[in-house]
Structures are given as C-alpha cells and as structure tokens.
Length: 353
Image 1 (cartoon, rainbow, N blue to C red):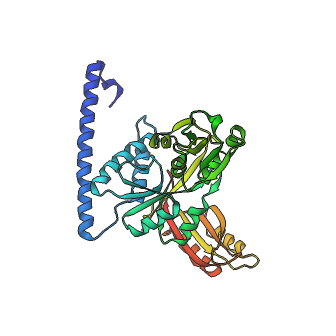
Image 2: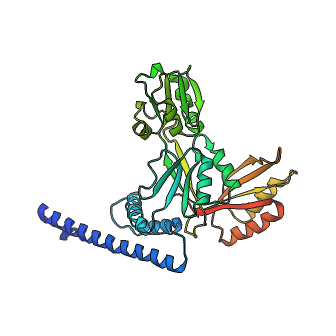
Image 3: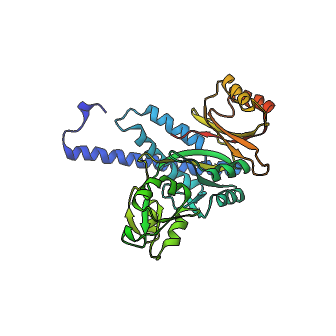
C-alpha cells in the first residue's frame, strides 16, 4: 500500500489493521488444512518422515529474501517458525529428548527430559519418530566430548543445528551467597563460570553432576549448597535465584544438534560432519587435508578423539560446508576412503540460521 493511500484517521487505520489480521488468520487456517492433508498423503504412501528441517530452513530463508517490509529478517524467521511449528503439531506431535531443563525447545513438541547425554541417544534409537537435542559445542569451553563420542559410536544422524545464548545463574535454598560452601553443576556450566566462582566463592567445594537439573535436585532444602544453571531452574525447583549472569563471557553461546534417524535433504546452506580413523604413520593427517583442499572443501572444524577400544589410537572429527549430495563432497569421500578407514557420515544438515 502506497503511503498516500494510508488512512489519515486513527479509527480507520485500526479498522484496516483488523481486516488484515482477519485475512492473515484465514490464510493460517488454510495452511493448517494443507498440513493436515500432507500428513494423510504421507501416511497413505508409507512416508514416515514428519520433521523436515531442510524444508523449514529453505522456506524461511526464501521468505527472508523476499521480505520487502521494514520488519527485520530475524523477526520474519521467528514469525514463520511459530506458524510452521503450530501447523506442524496438527500433522503429528513428535517427541524430543533433551538434557533438561530447556525452555528453548519448541513448545509444540512432547518434551522428555533425560538425566544424561547417553540416555538421549538410547531413547531416540528406540523411538523412530523421536529426536534428541544435545549440547555439542560451546564458544568458551569448546566441544562437549560426551556428545561427540556418543555421536561417533551411534547410528543416529545429525538432522539440524541451532545456536543459543547461554546465561548461567547461582541458585540455592539459601538466601545469602556467603553461606555457600559447596557448588554443584554440569562440568560445562562450572567451566563457563570458573572465573566468577574463583573470585566470589574461592573456598567453595566444586561438585560435578550429569546435568544442571540434577544439580538443582541435589541442593534443594540443603544448607550451604548452591548450583549453577539457567534461570528457569530456580522456578522449576522453587529455589532462590542468588545471582544472574555469572558466566565469564557475555557472548557465551552453545551450539546444539538435533539428532534423529534420517538425513534431511539439501538446502542452499548445509554443513556435513564426518568421522574417520587414520593409520599411525607420518603424513597420514596431511594426506587428508590435501584431499580436502584439492576438492575445494571449506573445513570449519577438525579435532581428534581417542578410540575407546584401542589404546593410543585416535579417530578424527571433521566438519565442512556442503551437502553429501554435492559432487565435490562425493568425490571427497571417494578419495578419503583410500587414505583412511571407518569413514562415517554423522550428518548432513541445514547450517544454523
């Protein structure tokens, strides 16, 4: 609508907004009917896939590019993710296992909290139409090794990724920080608050737990005990919030992976994760890097992990831009198989957006 055609009277302006809102509501209704119909078509054809992160990512990126309004692209993403999720649950409500608590998980899914990362893999493997959300890499402390080790050993695949800002709080049944003598927390959370703890509670005993939820459970109604975790933990377990934002870096961000039983399709911006083993000989890793460079692959991450069954032997984890269906990636795999063994594709999925 051109600016010269905009109403000059506030009442008329509000009427036009109301009319547009009604049109939007009608369109959402039409969209929801098509989503339900898609579910029926899938069921009839035997297609058991419901969660399509590749389609969602492609759709939202296209809408962001076509956006001609003054609404920022990031807000367009939030608006349509909400619509997509609300319609999606009409087709089928899926289960998501996670290391709780985590309010960032879509409210339209069935959320099932686990006690440790290993349980996420076990539950998703048993339930084919379920997914797991696991912490994978932190901007301060790096890789979550337990997640990586389980991923390498599991047959589950990475379906998508997302990055979330992380804020840690000090929580306790006590009301005074000075009364705390023991602090419980997940190893990553404790590490991300190391400097703050050293400065403010230098004499406190540090106890590692499997999750922030477990830490909160252990300190409830206990004198002298405190834990580290997200703000919502204090509400869930009726604990006192003694101090907010105690993480050492304001930009503290954790990358989460969604794992499932199938590979998503290709989008305009994908990432692929693989693992492989090398012979213990001079130049073995160099050969891999030369092959990566030769095929014009943008390598974004590489690290080694000890092979649990063989002492002093290591597997390598690599991440790079591209999809498994890309010609240069297919050529990469063919050449890597000649200089490595146990090559495994852990996932090929839409990059965080």
